[in-house]
Length: 221
Length: 110
Image 1 (tube, rainbow over the protein chains, first blue to last red):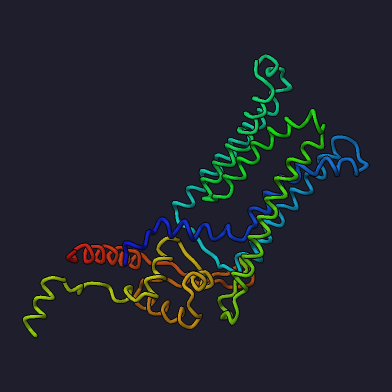
Image 2: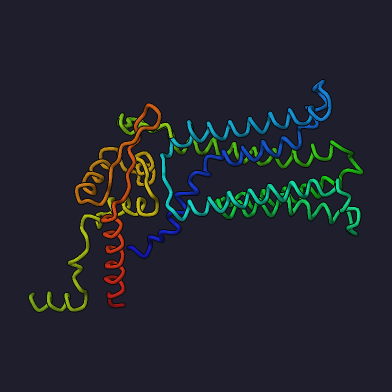
């Protein structure tokens, strides 16, 4: 009987329960959609460059965080309950935070590099450059996050985004800017949003709000 | 009859030291879930085990009386949350139970 209880697998299943609400997918989809749809907003908003890009992007990102935060607090936790994970899981999350900080610094450096003129000395084909950028900006960091979070679907999203950046550059001569990024990132974000909403609806059906809950067990997360 | 009983006990050792508090299936489930986390509330355990509130409460009380589970009420804003966690005694007892069951099952003839 006891050999059937693999405790590591059990802990992982418990942790992954918190991804069944689809909120992570909805959150990521909105971040990706902000790359895709910001150019549309920038055309509609009568405000000067670059604020016509920054404000819509910021708005969508803030919306994404709010949906995620309040969704977890008022929808997820009241339905599946509250768990305090053990020291191993906490250590993994600490490593993730450190990794994200390093990624942030590296991305800042990569964004500044083209303005320094260094990249003009690098003899590399444009399409290879975009493949590497896609891998460096999206695929690799997202895969590492997926590993630390045990969030399997994120591996697929990571590869989609990496290839997406490459396709955006590939389509630029045909569709032009910003239609190429609207199409690619809008599509990827849209698909992830549909996946997230599907998980979310299934989650609400699978975990209704507990009935006849003893008063002292009421929690808001 | 006595000869048969002796033969049975020679082939299969009687698991006299198995902790019967933990051995009950519902409590074993509760202990397993609490063992892999630092703490959890009633709603989480109810979802994972599929028990009714009354049934869950009854088993938690037995585990608390045995000194295996700690029931702590804490405030989250204006509401209280009841957090359940294994005591050190509970963790040791669960590890001990696992080891004894493994030994017992491995000792069974093919």
